Image (cartoon, rainbow, N blue to C red; front, top):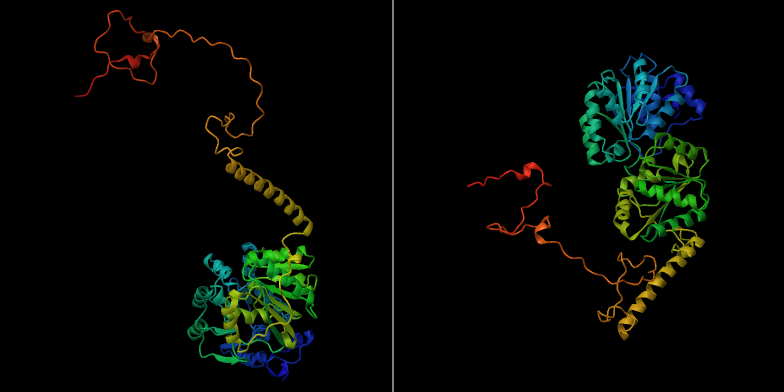
Length: 501
């Protein structure tokens, strides 16, 4: 079947023909007629099967009639990440080139003012991430009461990122009579509950069993040590020995690990980029564009790049960390083997990843074979630091350890014979400590001859003022004592004190 039999408009068919596509994918063939018939659709298909075009093409046909109003978009598409939202906008720009449609993108990392000005002019298609969308609605700059069609894409990824409460809020803000398109690659119980709540008699389209991997992807696992530097050493050898490696995405579980692996590969001469959620939006876009254009063959990324990104020619996927959730494995290796191509996925497995691998094999319904070859760690290729610097550091450490050991041996010998160690000497024979107590001060100078010291004659006790020490109270004044001189005291101290009874 060709696209001309699906009911699309002439403008959309011309745009599809200009891109070179002639035959729709199974998800497109089954979903497009139901979308044009204004029915709710629940689409379940593995990644890389053309789900984006399955809702973009019929939306362009439906939007040819009507006009957008200020701050009231006609259609709304929710995406879990900024990259996916930007990718959907590119699809509208490509297939809707011959139509005068206003498409707005609401994502984080972009000025509110620019986005608000676009909403004021009126939007036919609004593509947004849930957080930024709710920010605009709470500020009063966006009304969702005019939404005719709602698309929730990558719903299982929404669940993983904690966006399900936001999705429920958005669904309550849009009209009850809207049309809803719901696309996901897996169907966990939480997603099934949402579909039952917000979809009305949907047409279920399942072109493949949930959580299955593409047929053209060869999967392997490699046993590695638990130490990070061992895994990095094995990764570099896998990259150097890989056959037909054009480009590759290296997935890590944590953002911090992405930065470490990126710096390690860069230091060893690999052309590599990085992509994770804490990066600035301009840096994320630049790294993704460089990878798509082939300027950098390697991309170290977190799971932000695992869902829906359309990079057709990825030849290899490396799981530097085995994903914690089995569903993430399906999405990661779905970046390769797209549109009928072949690809290779290699997972680096430690002794702590046994349960995760068992869960992945149970989910995909097949065992992941072990790769052939020796992947033991080679000490000479450790990436901690270059060999020369390690030698200098080792010499310094050796000299320090030698001096420490020498001092320890000297102390031990002294304690044995009682002559060298200071601890066994009698108190009278010990050397006096220098002033300052540290023993690291300047060398002592020869002392000057001591002259005979004659103590001064002490003054009479009655004339010595007592400061800070209480003298015993005298019951009566001695007759021969001179009157005390209080001229140095302030007046308030000479006032009589009344004793309390």
